[in-house]
Length: 110
Image (cartoon, rainbow, N blue to C red; front, side, top):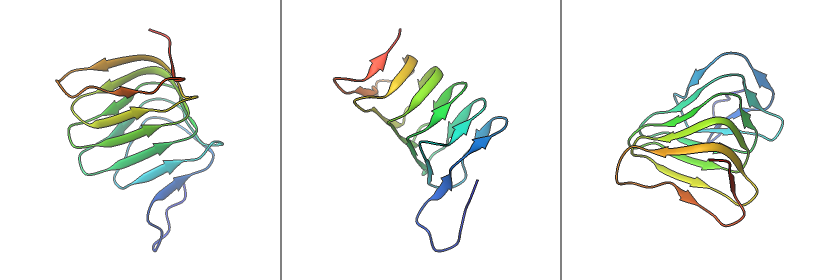
């Protein structure tokens, strides 16, 4: 993980072991992969171009734009979540009235 002062977002550009809870706005590049779960808390934005080996959990007030792959379930617990064309997600679970936006051309297996 590379986080530099002066950049608007933290960048993940390679394999990252374990599960992660974001603490700042983050972009996971196409070559970036999170081994297990990735959690996006309130007031934090994720731009996912790479992969998540487990679940993606977006808490209330979190923002996630998925352009990559989530091998587990995308849990939207009240955040602003979009699955873009070309993205692949195993399953989507919305736990509130705020629904995940799934674009035409996005692949959701379940």
